[in-house]
Image (cartoon, rainbow, N blue to C red; front, side):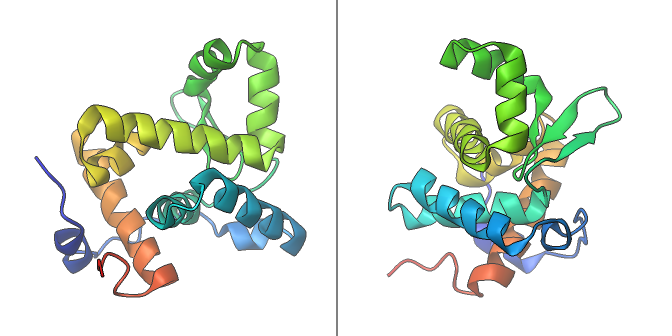
Length: 166
């Protein structure tokens, strides 16, 4: 099943949002996060927008460690799930404790991890919206709900023509 942004934008009816990150993040944290997102996107506007969409949906902040019902935690500004810690530790050849600490306290490390998770999902699925959903969950219906919510955040942040190509 392929996700189409036009279809998602047309059916946004969910108010599936965590608490606003702006409430918890001082301006200097937001500025640092913006620089991290810009750097992680490496000039690819579509990727920068995607990372902002994930961040807006996740609503995390520097220092965040939010418990989930399944025993995992969502860490840092892009709420990278702690289930990724072992894989990230293996990829970076760093101890798991250090990875967890970096995800919580280093916004650029957190954004780079989120970028890697999303781009890995994009590579494996070949579908942008499915990859957005995979960032959140391995479950199909959760992926679709999440992708719809992220599309709404992208539309609010970047306007109704976010997905227009020129």
